[in-house]
Length: 156
Image (cartoon, rainbow, N blue to C red; front, top):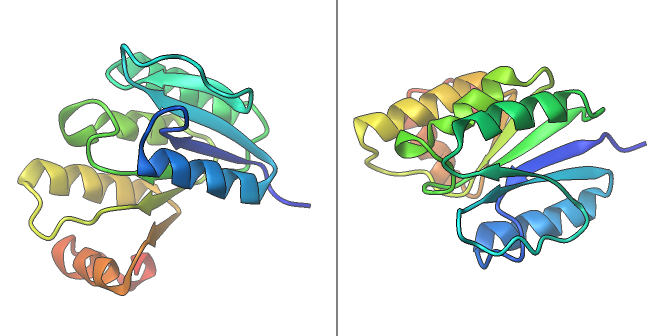
């Protein structure tokens, strides 16, 4: 039996490559829950598989989503990370969600910056410290994490 996975990401109908990626990945997983990151002013025409919304800039939504997902029978949370998706300075609100989870989280990093600002480096390093695993899209991204974010081999 497949574990129940909660995906935290943008999701169609939002026109975004990460939303499409998440839709396709979630469909392949099967036993899933979708928590869509929602920008104020965007239409709320989400498909039925979306069980929750997090307002991009509503910090309390991140906390409520973590509590709901943790209580839902989810066994792992998949966070699709891209710069600009999450609220707070350099996406720091996602850390509130991760800190409140009672189940492990896996971060999929769609972009690893070669020269992050101090704040971007801090948020990313804190996210990586709090997740059980990290997925990157290339060997180059893995090297950037190891070299630029001072990560140990387990994150490579």
